[in-house]
Image (cartoon, rainbow, N blue to C red; front, side, top):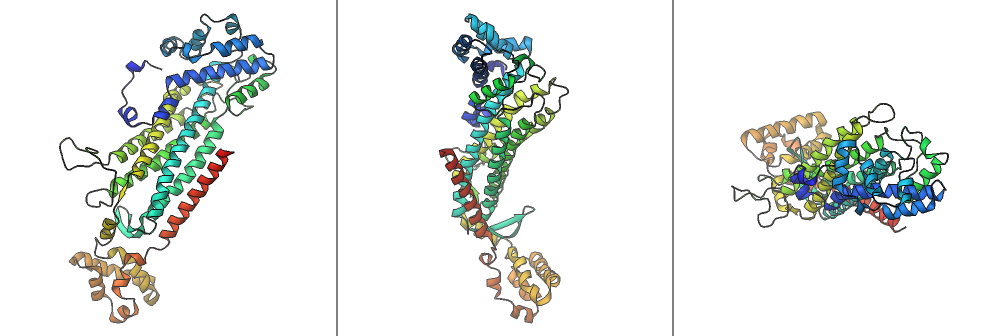
Length: 461
């Protein structure tokens, strides 16, 4: 925890970050969480007669985050290496005797910090889930609206076969369903109390250590555990991966928007506005700044995942540096993921879709987007392999002589084959070769809505 006045300026997070996520991982929130754990510990111990009830009352009254200056914690950390001893010093200053006697009874620094991390991580995952839900709702509306809007499907960045814009978005929507499941699982595994003392044995907590731990977990809304996790950081890494994965899907969507908004494609555009995406030198520019922001946030989130994986590898019963790496990596990952998802929701809500341009782009190659359709129509008459060769020859001629595919087919196909096929104009109509695309959009939207309905019902309970 460095002095905010001397921390690096992080323009992406400072300007485009999600304020609620930033608040969750703020210095003030960390101090409040440490105090909450100390209070819960005292209350649980007093309930079981492990410390005097009057001491617990004094601790509850005195362990107020407002009494703790961040600067004092940081100054102490420079000497101690950890924040809890300075925290205890701040809370014991001028405190009633019961506070000094019973505060932090039987606990160790990492117990307090890890239990606090579990609290903050649960809140952060809840925020991410809300952002994923908001993004999914916006995507769902767009998926339904464009379930049957034809556009060129692209593979290897080249026009391939017709699809619909709704079917394209359905794939993202389906991913978001899985991300919500991952986040829920990660939350359940990460929201776990830590209270096992110096070496993970709970010896300092006494014979009723398990009951104390259960009482602390209950008061904090965390899960109790019978196994220490001071060096078992898999749940933290899993939560980080779940968050970074959701941000990566947002980034993939952003890259799609960037590609489809290229001047020569121009099928979608981000929301406009005076000077939005403007260039300092080229007056015509309208850059896809929301998408660029999403991509930047996602890269930042993904870059922290290896740090959390490395932090899973300490020796013995306590880390020697690996744990410290989490302190910066986890907040940076979670806030970056939140920034990506929040910005993605805004981008989708303001997205401008141009069905007319999509239709025109389907014919950019003179009907060759329907080459597979022609091949499949020919296959029953000549076999699939020969059909491919015939259409390939027609496409080669069309591309080499800059002819429409219809003309090339007239020149390359035998009259009896042309007679066996539907009219060429009908055969080359993209609207006749959409396959399951509209149904795919419908299925994804229905699955999303069903999941949202279940979640809302569970929340009401």
